[in-house]
Length: 132
Image (cartoon, rainbow, N blue to C red; front, side):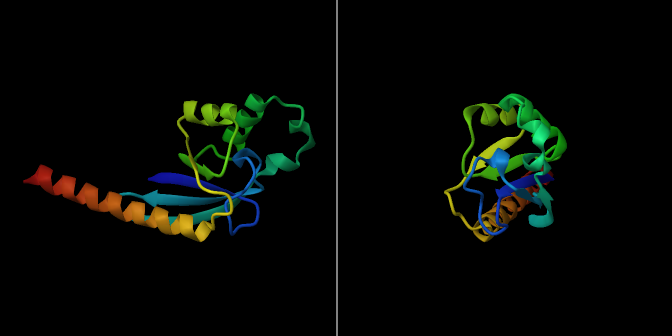
């Protein structure tokens, strides 16, 4: 199972801001064996409204975002990030993927569903080869 977060501000397009300051994240589970993508929840980025995080360094903010909001996520999809936030999440085993600004979330979902189906087919073929 792969948990994916898509950064968004309006719920319909990928956020045009740094993914770390998106208002919320659409959370999905990709089951590569079953070949499915399932919407889990809209998760608010509660950190952007808290006054006490404004004085944190970027690294401290990324750590807090990872621990408090994205602690169960394997992949984050956004339109941009700083070098530090990109490396912070990568070094904590979270892949960061980028799409063009204004990309509709529906298109990202469609692509992810195709990827899930392809992974499922590949796993089934590998299983058949191993069983032969």
